[in-house]
Picture 1 (spheres, rainbow, N blue to C red):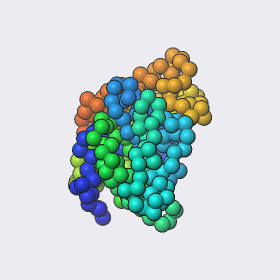
Picture 2: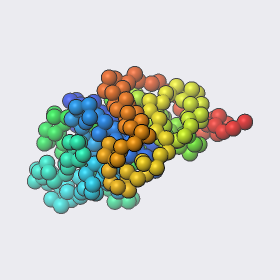
Picture 3: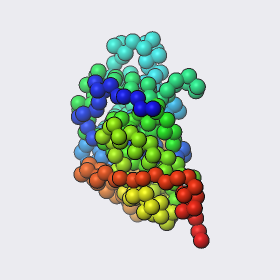
Length: 280
């Protein structure tokens, strides 16, 4: 079932990207460093974390900021009592950060949370001064609630690793994007290969369904350490391998800003993925 987006909540003044992928695959790392890359290109960036554990932006802000739902609850959901600084926090290199959060387990829908967040941003005219909005979305949950950012996005990025489980999740996400694209402008922008030395399985799947890889980030220890240091990769001590990763993020931001061609992909049947991937 499709839930229609209130036209008043459309984001018309920025390029909007939604980042999806299997849980634990590195969506928040990808989103935060991509946000910084856009900011390094001189863009005004807003990152919105859509996960109840609200840790999407902590490498940007160096803390776990309160969620939109937290602050709305504190004023008994009277949004007119809120100030911008109650729910928007400035992170590294000027990236503006919002944690939408999520409903308590088993009590509500993530789509409501996303809707309330965009409503607040529009009420305070924050989107009018933004060039890029990045939604960092919970895991591989593609129910109506957590597919809600697709109603706002121009392009969806799928983060995956070179393994069966990540690619299986990517296939489900492709199906969700395809469903949303029938009623909304969102299209698949491409694939981000993450935490992977090689990409043979990703390449095989991409070729079969009509996707392409836009960026490839190997499983480097500096990426793990950046999370532990609560820092983006652009703040870590310079090294040749780190410079290559930073350059890859800047290339990805440039390609997305220039306008990534939409991909028309057809998801595979579960059994077909099982037969496709692996070694002979």
